[in-house]
Length: 321
Length: 288
Image (tube, rainbow over all chains, first blue to last red; front, side):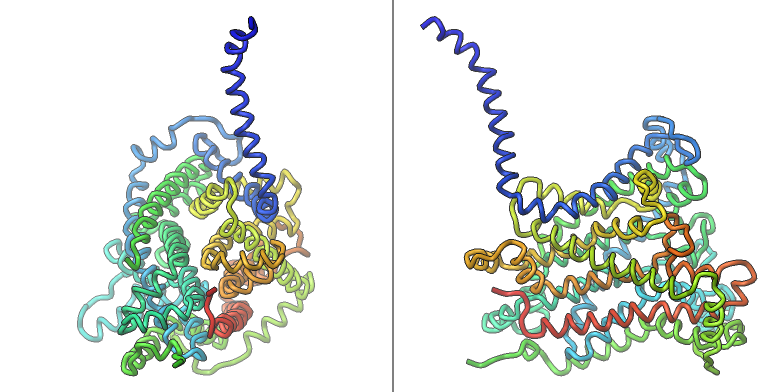
């Protein structure tokens, strides 16, 4: 009987402890129960955490330091970020260019990837691989791409575009397509768009093959009349996972445009007219040896992509409704 | 019951012809880099430097290839060695990636366990961080575990390339759970389900993935990680032949030949895998 009040005074923390052990215990039991799942995941997870996540975390850490690669990094807090937004005009130009390029080439490239994959899928099966190869060629060809566009948009009268426009009397003097800030971005938009049939495109080509054929037959009896209705009510909803994949790949590639621009407009481009966020990052990381600043740029770009991805995923849920 | 082929459903002949015409037209524009690479490899030196530049070749020659062979014969390490290195890195990296990423994608899409959504989100986020700034941390890690100047530094990080897991997971999500459930009732273990049911159903996905990874590994130069001459890759060896001041001009023809030769294996693989994608899925699609 006298032990009763003691028990009640003990019982509160004791209960909490029990509950905590219960939660931890339940998690452990849960993990034990799903042992097989974790075993399947383990090889990927270990390599991924070690060679992908860890370097990213270290980079984010660098973004709060002054780090010139030769000396150990010094902690400077938020100064890189403050300088980026308040004291770096070129960064603001690069943000503007990147948003412009990403908004146009990302969205149009995404639609083009699906559209061409779908059109090719309408062809007889025997000739499809050839067409897939031809449309994927710009992604396969590498350096030849820049050379062709270099000839096409060459700034002298012998460039094909200038030659053509002068022949039909549209212009009298050649236009410096790749060095004049007024023309640079439009030309680059075309080039990047032309190269945008890449990962998303092939995923769509493969995805179109996995759509359950019996759905089409069912749709036919339900009154689907033409290929457009079939596309919107059957094909697109069945391909939602591939559409998600294509969207993420479009975002990651269109916000990271840089490598394709360098052989055309040089690095840096005239008046920074074609400077992108990644150009800025490469400039500081590779040429100026300011890895801390470059890491801060990468972190900002990362956050922008994450935000864009959130919005796009929300839009994609409306497909086929 | 009337059996309808899907291509007969709601299609007009006029629409089909219009589609073909449109694709051929666009196809010419897209094929330019392929044609250019072929022409460039066959051009004699005077045509390479002709001004104004000409797209096609007038007097095709194999001189560039002969010259390349001579140069390859003079190399300090036998050229077959570079070739073998690249084949090894490419095959091991591609194979390992497809297996490891697919296994992870399988449980992420078809099993329910704590941490699964979190892990997948982190993989997607990893796609969005610029690799330009992670190169230094990566090198520091490789140096710490003594993997510098070994193939492990080139191959192992590719096993966890986020793109592959993402692609495989998206395709595996479409497999109906009932299909796996009935296999479980029949007493199949998880690995057997993965290997004999899941992987065959998503064949188009991993054939596509093979193209992506092969393309990357085939042109990989090894960069900062490999410094022993015997371990260098084909792509690196070719770049050593071609780069360097005046040599760049003198060897422009050889450079064209190299460009064409390096493009052939990815293209052959591309045609094989794409034909396979079309063949295997011609009649079925993923269904219960």
